[in-house]
Picture 1 (cartoon, rainbow, N blue to C red):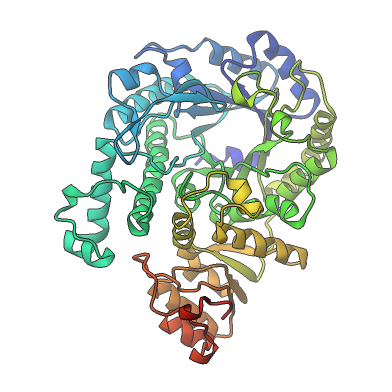
Picture 2 (picture 1 turned 45 degrees about the vertical axis):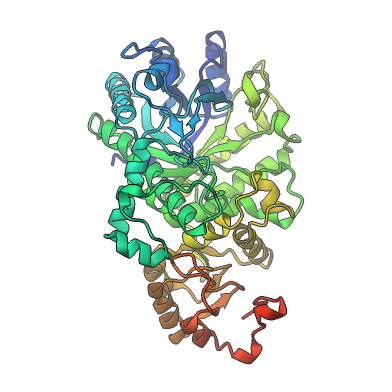
Length: 546
């Protein structure tokens, strides 16, 4: 790819998502951005807003904002916002989603998609074709703009909610995915203990109580989310192969609710030229070690899947959603982000929204455009970044010899076991929904940081290539341990590596069934577990430790 982003420290803000800010506010805002050292703005070009009727495109706002940005020396990130589809996509092409029971999931609106049309099914080939047509038109129009920094081809690729999507196109894709995975219906039946007559009889899980079916359904849905990035990447790349094509995850793998709002950072980072993350630190006041560790935890994870990454949507405030963020805590989050190796920052956002449920949320300036204490802090940080930008662009984080293993399958099965909760931060940070896997990740990361160790993350799928530089590997709630991973763990321990594992190690097989004993046979031998040390289920107890 073009090295633009690797040679330019992006320090900017999300700016325009129609209908706000209003045109009469743009010039003043661009001038004031220069006063606090912002060099980049992000423009969200919404499919529904900019193509209200089929093949009828609106360019006026985007043209004017590109012109203003150029006049005031600002680079532009062009963000395709495709999750809000025009009416014709639903009415003419049947682009709406259905839930697992085949009931329509009517398109609607919320803060991020205030203009409506959220969310079509991109597995529907007609939706995909019209999305490509939209992308081609806008890529052709703006590819020659000198201040165009990058194309963001997808914002927060994820599948949500759990029922996404049970339309005829998605069911066909799900069946094909199962065929590719298992080969024959007999192999699938044998693996899961089912008795389907044919792949063509398989439907989405009608209820969330079958672990095996829901486990597979959600894994397929995450694959479909990646396909959306690939669709847009290929379309725009064919028109402009000189600029970076980028994406960012909203809640990254180690903090997301993988079943309710799932994505695969490791795979998605490999699709685009440059990957990033939001920084959804939910509590503005850093009152405990969990809160303090959250920004570093997110950034350290992103660096593990994308060594050259950026932070999008670093919240400057929480407005009506929470208590105000103090300047001190804001400063802590920004410098933690940079210390963890981020190569660019976009703030969310310049002016707070005035519409929908995100009204008065996270403005760097007040709604009337006047500066706030955090606005001045943004400027002070800009001065330091400008002075040391070469260092920040080229510095590499010294990776720790202590690593935490992330297992997407263990994450998924634990979440599938607990399909009754719906508020993520309540069940992770309080005693609500028992999402033990995510609590384990948060807990050990925060504890190690408190002890002066900055652990690294390893996705289980990269374990083979990562262990040579690790001395201690921590396995939090590693419920699923396939044979190839067990081989790697045995070899690691055999050459002197230290493994610390929590309860639940090898609790389930790859078919989601409980193993007859756990840790499973090979892992029991590896950890020296003796039968006399185990408590039996008949006594109403499970493994307390290994």
